[in-house]
Image 1 (cartoon, rainbow, N blue to C red):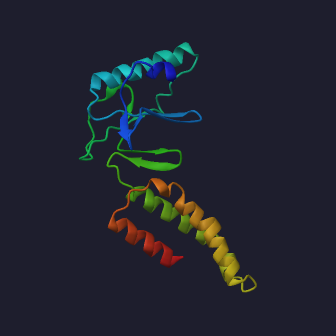
Image 2: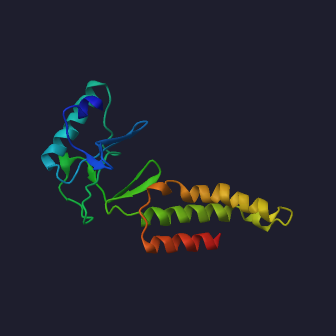
Image 3: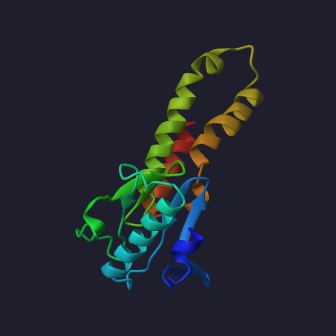
Length: 171
């Protein structure tokens, strides 16, 4: 990966830091600004494929996605290299990433997952031998943990805050 990006000056600047890739284990995300031309992105992807093959690795085309985000939330319909799917959303490290740069889909998904977990604990909620304090601790450690996964990356709108408040009241 380092070899692929050696000569490439692309990426985006966030808080004064230039970011050109995000990596975790075997998951890699290449990041380019909207000023990066389609030709530059094609070249970057070509280099990634070549360097990977030189190292005995193969890019999994079915798992490789392209998402182009701009400030208007539109998706460029040109398929770079013609072999990868262009998507509006995908799951990366357990969270939904959207080309609109918003978090409402992920928040609703997390609320659904947390409600499902809460429902699976119905036996505990009905058990009169379990203290209310213990039940609250279970909600805080199990249900809220599921809900809050990745929350530090959420971009909240007022409607998202209302959904979150409603979920908290539901619990």
